[in-house]
Length: 84
Image 1: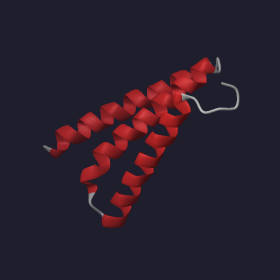
Image 2: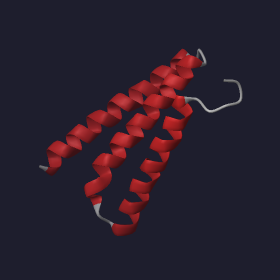
Image 3: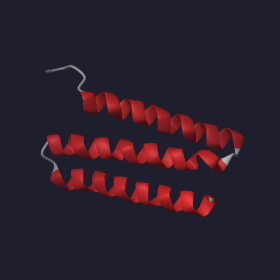
């Protein structure tokens, strides 16, 4: 739909808001137990951005977004292992 919101844009906005909310909570309370969730949602945001770039036929930027997603999920797994 020209000029309308697509599903990827809605997901990007949703994941970004959740990420910023977790980041704000962590900064405000100095309670770092939610950094894991913040990292996961940041990764999901970057995955959606990468997919949007692929749709625009920008392959290098799309692969960079997916690479950041993979690294972010890897970091979240490492954080969860470190916490336990």
